[in-house]
Length: 496
Image 1 (cartoon, rainbow, N blue to C red):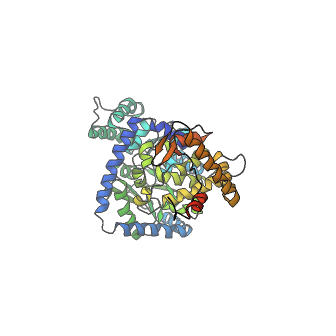
Image 2: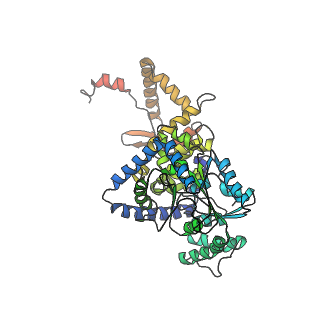
Image 3: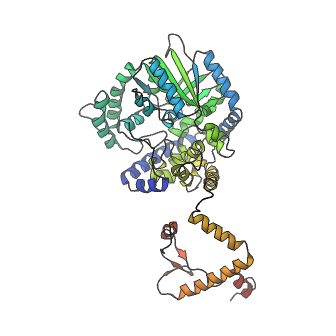
């Protein structure tokens, strides 16, 4: 796959392009609506759902407060059970570790379990540069890979594609990288799944090395956990001789009792199911059973930066369920590609700036503004991440990061307003000037009224001001200042 998020424009421009894609908007509205309804039904079955949310948030917060201790315990437990543990500070180091393991076993292809961590570090592209093919085995990831596309959803990466599009991708691309799609091939979901199954089967049986992520890592026993719906993960985790798992350091949970809470929260919030069809756990290497060589790459890649942010560290509670995407009005209309990252939607709008830092590039700085702050994401989040509050905090950080140099028009306007409002005399003069302008504008022909007040249509203004006036009715200033009105009417007692 050669498609990449590198070089994507800032969110406003990318969103404008996405809104022009009517087919994509239709696909997204249908898919997110279906998932929302399923989630609502299974969540309503749980009497203590809010208590579960509170428990999940508390466990994550407590774990993050002592993350160093839990990671050391996880490393010791993994090593005791025969796994090799690697620490990766960034994406480049993590990719190099995986490539080194592949080269050490003279492997030129690997099969992959769906993994956000490996997408985040660009592992497929890094392995391709080393002459190693990485085959995605999750159905949606396979569609994205064969279509030379980019993922647009955390849980359903090909959510922007419909059945007809998927059939064409399978027919045109499967034969180039393995077993071709059956001929004829309909767009019936069962036929499409069957084609993918046949295509992937030869890769499962041939691959000597697999790469996975992990939804959770239990520190007390060194056990990694993957939950999925298709069984491809189970194939990858059991058939190959070598398994490499790339795991974000925030995935650790201290005990199995803690894991119990998340195994109730995750399936209901993600796929709208009471439990995942496949929950795979593995603890190191077991002679004669599964991969005989297990490597675990514990990945930082900005997570310690996020951990240091007092408000933003709650984003590390995220269990990648994507519930916030499915309820977000902005995501539903723009889709995931507009966010320019493997982490789209509300969680991506906070996670990307937290991992990369603000003031680094325009695209990342635009993400905290990709929200209406309606709060639906917080209500849906199973671990109660207060995304709207983090967005507001990050907007402040973006502004602070750009202080100095040539100020933006908005900053100039705010500074001017501050200068006027900081003086009673200046405020009074500005009120009289506005009232004079109001009386003058009211005498001009044209315009229209909104209630008792006259409003202006779109007016030519410099820069962003023009776009602002195109979406709003600009009111004519009041013909009398508040002070004059108060003085004339004795505070409204003598108004006639």
